[in-house]
Image 1 (tube, one colour):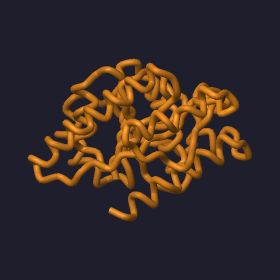
Image 2 (cartoon, rainbow, N blue to C red; image 1 turned 90 degrees about the horizontal axis):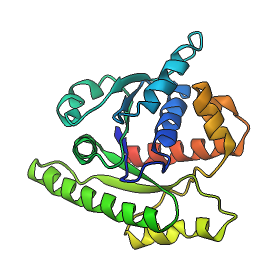
Image 3 (cartoon, rainbow, N blue to C red; image 1 turned 45 degrees about the vertical axis):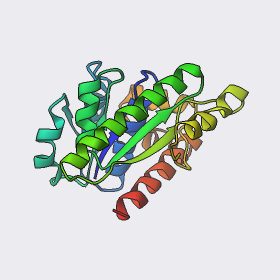
Length: 218
């Protein structure tokens, strides 16, 4: 399975989601490739810290660009899953990821800007699906992921309205606004090993369970 964590808006939690999904799958004994397609290189920085942890299991990591749809199919069979951390506002790179992906995950926060960005992302996915159809590829599976939201605030709870307005199906799992995500990122770990008893860790495990169920239905 190739998973593209994508979206037009920066700061929506794409790298947090991608690294934690990859790390939790590794914890479950799977061989995972994490593709950092963002020029900021945050996932690669996280990966360098992960590899420095004296042999602790971590995903393989490589950089990605606008030719991923050409090269990833030839290596994907070596892995249980490939997780792509897409950049915001770089259409050719995101389009390349969507062309090759089986599942697109769109992290969503709340607010007007997030709503506009979500609409742009949906438009990009629709254009990509048209291209996939021309190449006789199945339609892309798409799920929204509530991310970096404080549900104690009314503006946070509006995120589901944005997702519904965009015509998307949300995961039941949420990755909410919790300090453990930032702490784990800085340490080069997934939150399920950094703070295994935390609510954040439970959120990631629930998300990965949903992803695996989606994969098993293909």
